Length: 384
Ligand SMILES: NC(=O)c1ccc[n+]([C@@H]2O[C@H](COP(=O)([O-])OP(=O)(O)OC[C@H]3O[C@@H](n4cnc5c(N)ncnc54)[C@H](O)[C@@H]3O)[C@@H](O)[C@H]2O)c1
Ligand SMILES: O=P(O)(O)OC[C@@H](O)[C@@H](O)[C@H](O)[C@H](O)CO
Image 1 (cartoon, helix red, strand yellow):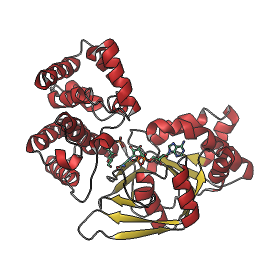
Image 2 (tube, rainbow, N blue to C red; image 1 turned 30 degrees about the horizontal axis):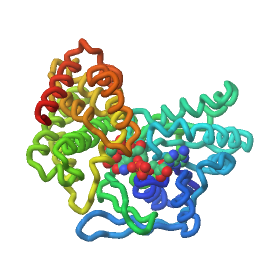
Image 3 (cartoon, protein in one colour; image 1 turned 90 degrees about the vertical axis):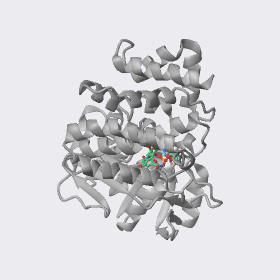
């Protein structure tokens, strides 16, 4: 069985590639990073190390790679795959869509079997977004045929994989915990399960619980830690006041999640405690610049801060802590991150208020907007 995975980066090698390989797939990675592609082609294997006391090592074998900029190679790989997955970043999905569309056309011409394409990105409806991009490259007749043989089930993926600093470009250290949940209701009957994947018929509670707890808490630690000069999540989580703020943030999202989805309160509190423990894993070094990366994406209306804050407001709560994290995100100034640079330039050009309104899409008269600006002003006072 052949799997094609777009993105041989941290989560691609450290999680998706590993699980697919353990499930019996020969995995081909498609990536635009020539170093990774060459190393995968030459060696056909790599090592995953678990970040725990035992530092257990897992060997991933039977892998190879193609150059993601080679349109013919990508289309052929899609045409031949039994499963396609992605972990490239949600904003990159539009760039891989044309190659996938060409591969689908080839599959249809060859009479190939049914195919699932699963985007493993931190986003609500990642595969659905990918489908829209792909279908934008197909004419009406091809779209109709593609709908019969290709499905795009949404997914939630959870495993902390920091930036890697090994001599070996393929080596990857990951936290032991993982969770991969896939929307089975969007899959063809008789699908072959991937070992370790949890298939559910209603994905929304899982993806929102993950994004609004793991990722909301993570970016709270990153943005608030960054304000205090910490360079890693582990350093930030060594500061009791930051831990208190992360917990307060997750209390707000937790109240929304428990009310919306009927999660058991005590179970949800355990889920939060487990996540705090994962952030503190001192076998990992996770830079705040990675966890806070792409602040414009993180401040966007459907992501980990604005969405739960507006839901909390609609439910009659005052999401002060989520607003504080959004204000802290406006102070995230990291020259190597293009979204951070854009955000800082916007603050210089238009001011923080207009910038917050533009990127969060929260109207200036909204009570949550007022909370963000109050926090932004207090942070400015503290920094004087
Ligand atoms: N790292 C984590 O802890 C983690 C956990 C869960 C989900 N995620 C999600 O997984 C995705 C990837 O994150 P990551 O941390 O692995 O990032 P990463 O930067 O390590 O990996 C992304 C890879 O995609 C490749 N890429 C970029 N453009 C491409 C293209 N056009 N075609 C093929 N490959 C391309 C990059 O070269 C890179 O190797 C993101 O959506 C992220 O939110 C990450
Ligand atoms: O990947 P992002 O930029 O959406 O978020 C950064 C981290 O919070 C994220 O990568 C986590 O490590 C991961 O989502 C854990 O499952």
